[in-house]
Amino acid sequence: MSGGWLASDENFLKQSKTIDYLKVRGSIGRSGNIGPTYDANGNVVRLPYRTQFTRGAGPLLGSSFSTSTTAYLVNPAGNPVTTWEKIDRVNVGADIVLFKNTLTLSADYFDETRKDILGSPNLPGIPGMAIAQVNSGKVNSKGADFSGMYDRQFGDVNIALNGNFTYAKNTVLARTVTNGLDGQSQVGRYVNSGHYYIAEGIFQSQAEIAASPKQTLSGLVVPGDIKYKDVNNDKVIDAKDDVATDYTDIPKMYYGFGLTVRYKQFDLSTQFQGVEGRTINLNGQLHAGPNGFNQLMLDSWTPATAATAKYPRVGLTDNGNNTANSTFWLRSGDFLKMRTAEFGYSTPERFNQRYRFKGARFFISGYNLFTISKINDRASIPKRQTQAGGRVSRM
Image (cartoon, rainbow, N blue to C red; front, side, top):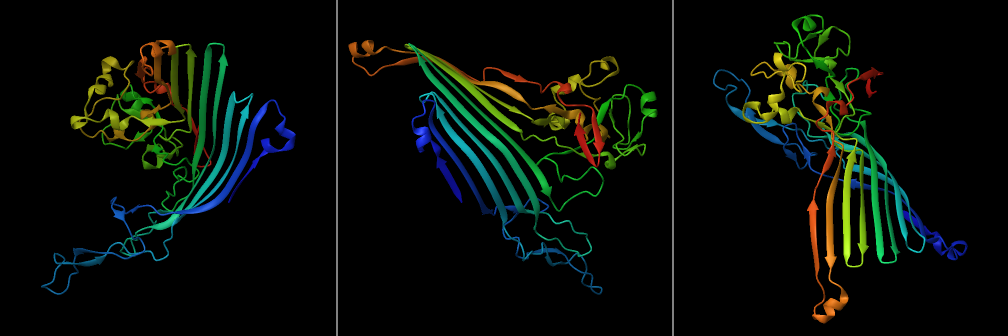
């Protein structure tokens, strides 16, 4: 259901010298969504409500029929109450044109809740079979969109400005697969956010290791390895110190702005684009390449580079302590880039008429000319975090 009010057509605004157009609109509704679902191995489950059979090891019967004989097994069991995902949406917005079509503005607020999202069931192994999918997830997305344009002529000069901004917050409200440990549930966190150990720097000496909680993520811990925070204060660094966070590679804000200036036959235009609230995990990039090595390893810790090293020591084996997902590898994915820039010249009308052609335009343009980013700056991600009520918050 949707509706709108064209307020600028009302008598009290028809004679306005400022407002040329004003429309207020809103909508509310529900829709269904059925997309592909997947099993634990990443295979597509087309019909999750139907039981499937597969060939597997057979039972042990007598002396001649052994487990090496294959038999048909139920895998996965169908879920007859499976239904499709439901999406409830609310949207309100307004469009306005001001100052004799000089300034155009548009704004929207949206609130969207998805429920009955298909996901993996959280079942014990006692039944001896797997269930395809269950309607277990619930996610809320809310935010705002804004766009504007200013276009005005000043004698021979025309100036056009444009801008847009989007903010969206996507939060997990419910899911079946959860971790019972305090601080490890994704409920209440941003969608696609990750679990990380909280890094507290790099061990510089064996004495520092001896004075710190015991780290069990690998069998070997030596100077040059990453030091982690003992979240539950049990003097041991293990899976219980892995915490849920709001770090995600999905930006919370998108924005852009641009400028076009025309003077007689000359024109200059540029467009910028940026994102905010995005976090990138460099763990995979650092350990990519043949045998997990690449040129980034040149900045790894050694006794000679201990004061300036960007990354922990290089380990050929038993290196799980340094390859674990932790805040050490997180960087800000925020950026602002000049997406396009162009300078042009158009032939004048009298020149076109004299030589009998419609016209020509000569221009020089560039794409992605420069980028402002903090991806190489470890300080771009807060190092200090606190845990309260099972949540990890930034400071």
